[in-house]
Length: 147
Image (tube, rainbow, N blue to C red; front, side):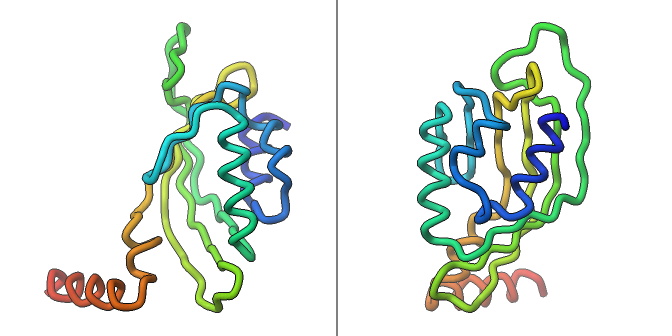
């Protein structure tokens, strides 16, 4: 099984893995970027996932598309080799509401291990719209802009 297949398997429901499982897909010097922060190295990524696992009941990714990019032979740390489109369904502990979010991940793969991971998604939809008063205001603004 190649690293992209292992990636898809782990992200089926990341609440069913242990942070140590991430070593099966990410290099020790992984650069992992999301709209909130940057994590450098496998230990920071494992810590990030450990925190997520304490807060989430489930976190499942439905992989819609996987695109392989053509790459040059002298690969840099941030060179993208794959683009993955997904829909995440997240249920936090002590919450009944599901958060469903579409996103895209850029991956850099070298020697069957991921060396670069960058996520793109609507942070407002994930976080701000789920804060009671702020969420109401954002949804009202979006409704007005859509007219």
